Length: 70
Image (cartoon, rainbow, N blue to C red):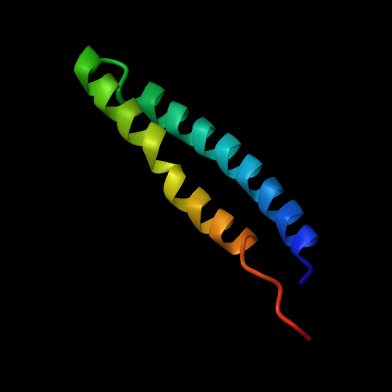
């Protein structure tokens, strides 16, 4: 697969990942953490704010692989 096509697909995947992840994390927080104290909200959003980086790193690593010589 050409590098430019891989980067385009990766960019689209990262945008979709961020949108879906933010919607799921926020929905979960409003449904289950509504009556929790402020420090639970702080820990939750701190954790979920950093957790999306792991799948994004995998996508970026895949995007940056050099093209195979064919």
